[in-house]
Length: 194
Image (cartoon, rainbow, N blue to C red; front, side, top):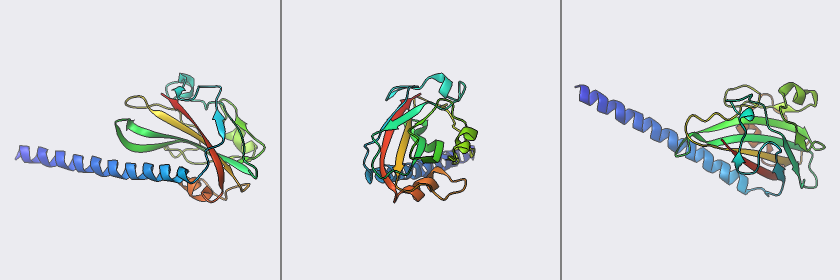
């Protein structure tokens, strides 16, 4: 009887993990296809870490958890605002991607602004009319990397939009992506590792 219960529990857990894996792969495939619709021509960089390089501990959940400096150029003509997103596709482990983790959602960045300073706080953004969306913890701040297993990649992306603002209230990353999809002129990407 105990063997049957253990076997049933193992089968149930395997089924749940497999379902979650299939769901996550589907979500991530949709994001890949989403980006195929846009030109990747904006140059996004950081003074905090190099492209494909390690993210210093001060920008992580094991350090001060402050946002890194970001700056971008090669802006397309007609840009009226920007969006910044940061996503980890490797949760909980790179070899077992069961979660897509949204670390930072910032939108309605004016077209005249081409950088975010190190340690930018939500209040600073709000003072400039810039809004924040929900991260995976359902808060509106930058959440630094703190992977439970293995080395994860963190995708910072900037999008140039042809509209001055997105009419959204407390959106998720997906809601921002849905709202901006018809207005993206180009985007840029910077990957960091932790």
